[in-house]
Length: 325
Image (cartoon, rainbow, N blue to C red; front, side):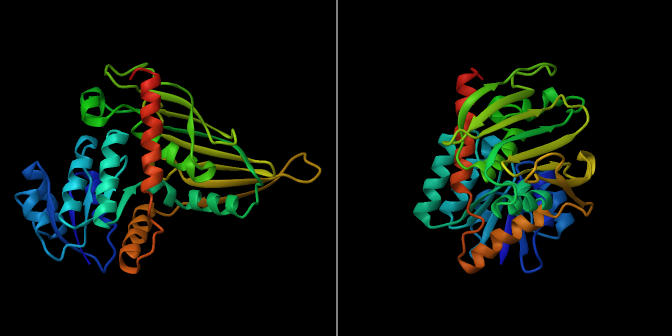
């Protein structure tokens, strides 16, 4: 299979590095010529002078789109109209309306679109989904998630601080992963409560989001995303009627990834506890890409996350509407 990358920054490089050996990277494009030239040199591929020229490659199977949020949907639609499958970075668009247009074109053209939510492919998350689906913690009652970093000098001047380019602050940045993961355990969620304050950074978008979401049965996901965390952290706790799963860390600056399973005993009291550690380098990017490519090759739908990605943006839109952001 042949692939191309649109958007040659850090994430575009990560996606290119995740290509398996049976995928040939045949081209790249970035609106900043020097960035595209550096990418082309690093990956020994061709730098195309225009998007239209790249999309004219007849045997191009799919494109990876790894740009700012405000250009994700228009680039995806252009690629789909050119007959290419699309792997697009989260959140897929800056709002639900834009992403609905992507979904419509994909279905009309009978092409695949996958939104890059790699956190579902982390080993601890995959293990947690396995334990939950096997019924080992019983019926899920609620979950609690926290995800944060501390920003960096000049963070308030980056494109993520400009709502017209990003779509919002921490909610649409790290908060999207928390919402997506929550849906993996609780299904479709709706707005219950949210606050989107700005405590520290001098910018128009929120630097923290606190939200409570719930499914139709009333099971709650209580979540916070923050860029005033100072020490990077990730925590996801899933509480069932028979036990609890606790995920901590994502590797590198977020700390070693671990999963702890607390199994409640019939007589209650202190649970039986088992812990798994995952010190290996993060391979979620490779696993996610491999699943998408396998679907293209075999016609399966394991990587299809259009509906859940649309739901994430629907929840985000409702939160911003309720909090006047």
